[in-house]
Amino acid sequence: MSAKVIDGKRIAQEIREEIRLETARLKERGIVPGLAVVLVGGDPASAVYVGSKEKTCKEMGFHSEVHRLPEETTEEQLLALVSDLNRNEAVHGILVQLPLPKHIHEKAVIDAIAVEKDVDGFSPQSTGNLVIGDESLLPCTPAGIIELIRRAGVDPAGKHAVVIGRSNIVGKPVAMLLLRENATVTICHSRTDNMEAIASQADILVVAIGKPKAIGRRYVKPGAVVIDVGVNRLETGKLAGDVDYDDCLDVAGAITPVPGGVGPMTIAMLMQNTLKAAKRKAGV
Image (cartoon, rainbow, N blue to C red):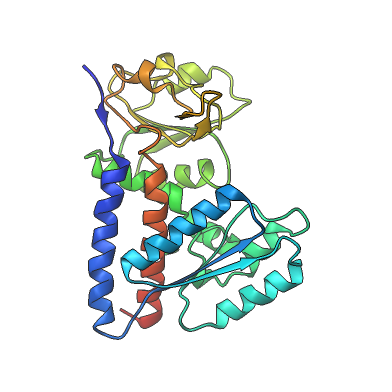
């Protein structure tokens, strides 16, 4: 039996449509969600991501601001812009596109974003709220992973979830969110012994290690849900995930493709965070 393919593109579109409808209702009450995106320098991939975010904002009916700054922008100038955006009533979410030029300390910039506008969910306060279970704006990719699992008809409660990867952006927060969903969670990483044996016990396997096709069928329990977060460019120019999709397709119960799996969810959850921040500010 071939695995059920979890269509992230379709699910993301469903979420975006829900956001668009709710935004239209809020506009009738004079509330317009606003997102400000800041891009420093000319990194081509970052420019594509920012353009996509700007386009999606307009589709949702949001107020959208994009601040494109030159590579030589100083840390002080960037922090001054973040401070202005923190005070801007029309802006409910602030996203500073990473990576930043090397002369700017990313942590200083992330820490400067007001927690109620931290739609990336990366600030220390947002992270702390996530860990202790308080209400917070969740990191977009991990939140998108949970949404994919839910909308694929899988309840994580009582399941054994294995996360391969311990980054602050995906691995650690998705483990915390799976705990919140009452899964039993194991985190594997580059120093883990017997990773194959541990992974092959997982009912839900989340892979975020940045190595193309590193995880094959031997790591997958028959019938498991496999979520592939990796996006790697092969020498052929094609994209591949961290999971060997073809090798795992007839073992897994459900699996995300690359592209078209986790990727489209990230911007959808960014829009959802911006909507949530606007509603909180308005007290609705």
